[in-house]
Length: 84
Image (cartoon, rainbow, N blue to C red; front, side, top):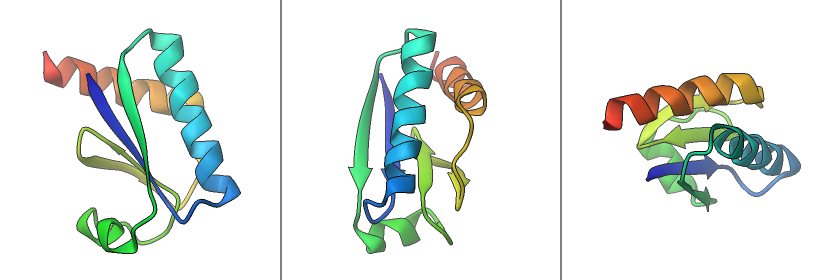
């Protein structure tokens, strides 16, 4: 199962990133655990400079913007392929 983290203070943009991630995994039919992380100390562990951030299987894939669903689907696909 994929582990996806949305890093941010809980703002509207963070919610949009979470929604995009949920839509991407649903479209691909992939099982994923999506977690919201609001602790700024955790942001630093991923070298996130601007929120919102998106982490897939402990790898920061996006920061400071809202990625598109197709973009997230590519990242999820790569993470699934790497896990096999």
